[in-house]
Length: 193
Picture: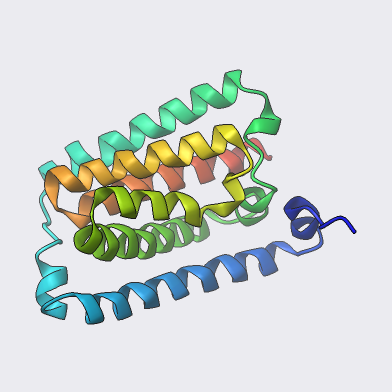
């Protein structure tokens, strides 16, 4: 018996159901980052405080600008690469096509904060650049069978991880991740109209 494709499963779900599962996943990731930091950091509070530097310069140079570069590369690729290579099974379309601006901001902010807390804040800080970047890419499992998406998520993972390597500042990676997700969500939202 053939296993149903992810896109077929997604098509049977409402936008609300897909969004619920996305938010639930992010809350689990956020919980894992809190539990992981409690277990792995020498000092829970100090482990987080030392990674959060509210430097506008760092956030701009190593967060916002790299995020804009990634979005520009993605948009160029989307223009020249056939759509079937960029199809994520319909998840992003379901989540963002009818969402309000504030809803898009809220979801992309939650994703950026939770994923960066776990992958850079805990895994990168405790196990290093390579391991955290690979685990981040593997977590985006729906991209593993799509070569272009896999290369894209690997690039983004290592690129954002490198920004963390340079700065040790979780706010820079959160900013980059947020800019990438936010602008691509806006693209999906307004392209679908």
